[in-house]
Amino acid sequence: MQFDMAALDPDRRYKILTATVTPRPIAWISTISEQGVVNAAPYSFFNAVGQDPPTVVIGLLHKPQNALKDTAANILATGEFVVNLVSEANAAAMNVTCMDAPPEVDEIACAGLTALPSIAVRPPRIAESPVSFECRSIASLATGPRQTLVVGEVLHAHVADAFVLDAERCHIDTPALHLIGRMHGSGWYARTGDLFELRRPTYAEWLADREK
Image (cartoon, rainbow, N blue to C red; front, side, top):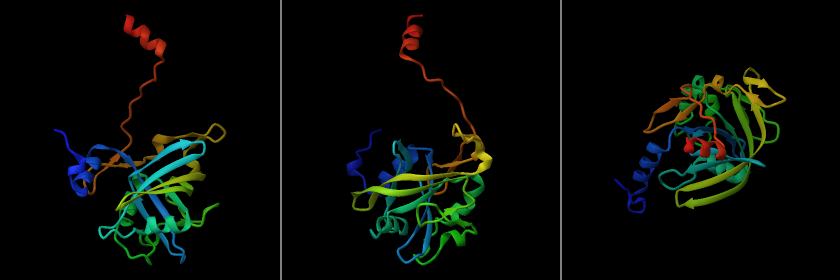
């Protein structure tokens, strides 16, 4: 079965993408408006895309009536945001911040979370998150009538001490973070504990194996 994406309406395109591009890491984004109101919301069109400078990318969808969601409006207005990663222990609190609260409501407070001051940006980080990235927007692009792409440079990375194996070598205990990923449908998530390892071969090894 092939799907002509141009012939489908946006909702059907969304279903195909989110049902197949899985699991997706979750950017639990905290921002602050020009009026000083804190906002937090999760976005799963997100990933790391470079290390020099360290960069992340986020796809921000608009509201059905084409208005910007608070996160997008705040980032475009201030250029600053914090990406907090979501552990399984924080899944329920993250889900609270999904709600359609009005712009004057602080979702961090609604979810019973703790806001901590950041070092280089105004938006706070979420204390309960095991990893937080303070980011400054370096590019934004309207990729469609109802979506905006934001590229952010990571200025500071905060990793809870319990998960740092060797600070000098930047070794992190990734399995212990118990991060979750976004799956298909409206409420499905994945744990990241079922792992397997593949060693990357060299071309010489591949040639040698082929000749056996």
